[in-house]
Amino acid sequence: MARALDLYCTFLKAVIAACLAVMVVLVFGNVVLRYGFNSGITISEELSRWLLVWLTFLGAIVAMREHAHLGVDTLIRKLPASGKRICFVLNYCLMLFADWLLLSGSWRQTIINLDDRAPATGLSMGIFYAVGVIFGVSTAVILLYDLYRVISGQASEEDMVAVRESEEQ
Image (cartoon, rainbow, N blue to C red; front, side, top):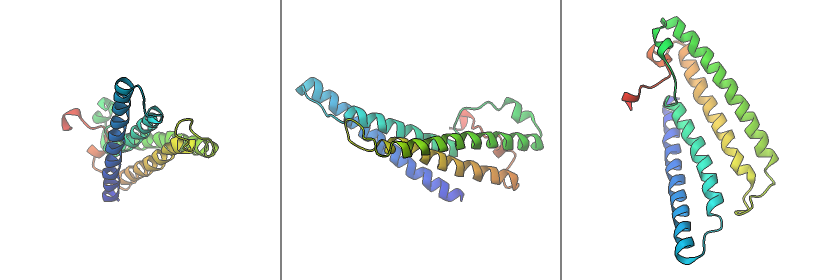
């Protein structure tokens, strides 16, 4: 399972890089066209905004897998292994609840906006909200996998401190 998650995150990093590359080309090209030729790419601003949202959500999935989100571990590091385990399980249950809220809301928004069209591109607005569904499902899988590792005893005591030190980067 860890290998599959790592491959998935590698794929997401490639998609993120592609989103960023397209954004750079669209925005830079639009600036050059506006100031150099008094014209522009009509869909540039809208598509760049969509790509930024997708890039952000996909990056958050990768950060979740790599435990790269911000966190404070001062108290947790001082607890015994059983205390770390309890805090980890509570923390992950709360994150799963928040993830469920985001997933269910994104799913509803995707369905509601499926037939609405974006003004410049004409694409379905459901595509814009679908990244929340992808984020919610992906994050749930990552959280459940980490939770399973801790509950089953496969995780080390250091794994229960789900914050990565900045020096390790």
